[in-house]
Structures are given as structure tokens and as C-alpha cells.
Image 1 (cartoon, rainbow, N blue to C red):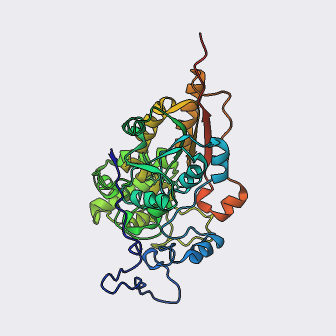
Image 2: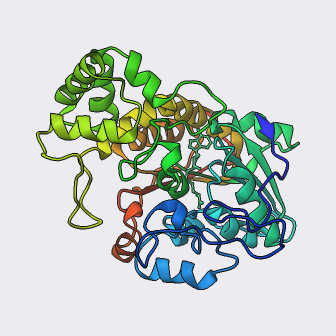
Image 3: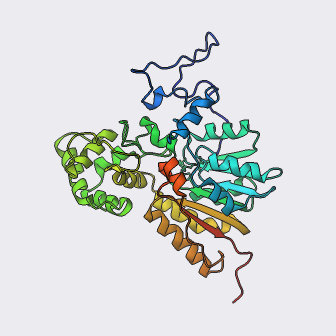
Length: 374
Ligand SMILES: C[S@@+](CC[C@H](N)C(=O)[O-])C[C@H]1O[C@@H](n2cnc3c(N)ncnc32)[C@H](O)[C@@H]1O
């Protein structure tokens, strides 16, 4: 795990723009067909929010996430659960775009400390730079939250008053075709959150047994057609060529589900894509998400100071049951306050504005001052 120094690209050189360093003129916009940009890298206005703030507001108003950014999920509920106060130490275990972090950091000033972690070294310097530009004091660490206890020790901090883990992927990861997380846009089948680690999705799908693929897709994706999908993946890799692009995996899932065509056309943002569950499962395997989350949950009572609060946003049943079980066990041991509140769900208004929030569940734990005697 590494502390991150600021290595964000100079302003104006974010994706989607073509820097023109020789002339000092603003970057030229990429060429695209038609009147509106469609592909991620063509949305140069949304990708340069400092220069085009109005475009970002327009994208949010029409219910989409501006390219290159991420809308924090259940922000009001997270703030109400964590109750940040000036002087608090806040660990954001999944910094992402820094949306939650910015709102919490404003409330722990003056005197508070924000430590932001993320496995994704691509986005981390950009998030840190954004927070620093807003005058917020932030220490950022590249690494998994399974190493959060050590990260805090390395920062000279003996515990956090507030911890947030907002699980899963950011919109930036999902939207960038070259990251290979998306069933919407074709790209290399990568799916690694931390690209310094070996083992892409393509490599796993090329080498895993049919049984392992089926088990992963069924257990981590809750996918009822897991057996047909695993069989189709293996048939294709043996008879055709390796699946090395996201479109290859989409095509295998559509064929296994007997959905005609190479592309699935959704009738609304609320219709789940037939490949969504398979992509989720493969992503979880590639990033060993269950192992990292389990380790984080084991350490959490020792990361949060007595009297402190932890909030965890989950997005599917597997994550949810791990988090519930950890809090319940901790409550039985007198580490977390009980009874535990039922997880909160996003408002219907938020689900409409931000379809990516629709499966979110917010779990909250309050660390007891001391385990009860006896
Ligand atoms: C949903 S996004 C967080 C968005 C953030 N709350 C915001 O408001 O911008 C999830 C982030 O968690 C990161 N992540 C996933 N697994 C992680 C892990 N084990 N350790 C650290 N970060 C992780 C991902 O790289 C991604 O950036």
C-alpha cells in the first residue's frame, strides 16, 4: 500500500480533450459524428467540468451521470448516519470520485482529518486534486480497504471516528470502455480495479474450469442461467477464439439466454441488462471482492474508535449478507450497538434521478464505548 503524491494530469488534459501545449490555447474538442457526442471519450464538455460547469448540471438534470464523474449515492442518509463533527477523523475507504468525502470533509473542518483510500490508482490522484482544490486537507492511500488498519497506522492515526465504505465500482470505472467493466461499450475484458495487479477477466475466463465459472456466476451474480452461460463461454473459447473483449462476453451471455442479436436494446434505464449479473460476478472474482470485504469487516471494530460510526453501502445480496453478519456478530460481542437498524434504501426520487443507486442498501454500525462486562 502506498501513500499517493499528487500526480493528477494538468488541468485541461483530462480524457476527452486534446491538449494543445504549443499554442497555450484551450484543448481542441474531439471529432464525432452527428450533433451530439455519444461515446465516452467524445463527451469532452462533461469530462472538463471546470471549463463547462453548465454541461454537468444539464447531464444531472436529465437523469444521467456526467461522463468522468460519479454521483454519491444516498448522500443525505450517509451524512445523517455518520453525523460528522468538527475535529473528527474520517476514513473514506472507497474514495472514488470523492463525492461523499467532500461533503463529510466540509463538516469535520476545522481540525478534522480525512484519509481517503482506493484500490484504483487511475482515479485516486484526480479525486485528491479535486478535494485539495476545494481547500480540503486530505491524505490519500492507494490500496485495498482490507489494509485500512495499517493505512491509518502509517498516517499516525490510532482510529477513525467515522468510516464509510461505498462498495463496488464507480461510474468512472463503469463508463470508461478501456477498463473493461461495461457491457454497454466494447473494450478489453480487463475489470481490474487495481491495474498494477495481475489477472484480468479475460485471463480468468480463458483458464478457469467450467464448474468454477458456473459457481461464480450463480453465487456472486445470483444468475439463474449460470450453467448455460458457463457452458457457452467454454464452448466459445474451445471452438472459436478466447473471449478478450467485453462484447465477446455479452455475446456469449445473449447466446446462452437465447436472446437474438449481438446487442441488447434496453427499453428504459431501469431494465437490467441480461449480462449485468455475469459481469458483476466476473468482476468480483477478478478483484477478489469477497475476501477483501471479509478482511475489512473483521478489522472494522478496531478501525472505528469507541463511540465512532461506520456506514457501508452495499449493492447486492452477497455483500449485504456479509455486512449484516459482521455487524450482528459484533453486536453479540458488545462491539457494535444493538439492536442494529434495518438497512436504509434510497428514496424513490434518488432512484429516478440516479438509476445506479437503485439496489443500494445503507448499513450503519455504532461502535460501543467498551464491551459490556461479563
Ligand atoms: C462506488 S465507488 C465510490 C464512490 C465514492 N463514494 C464517491 O462518492 O465518489 C467505489 C470505489 O471503491 C473502490 N474499491 C473497490 N474495492 C475496493 C477495495 N477493496 N479497497 C479500496 N477501494 C475499493 C473502487 O475502485 C471505486 O473507486
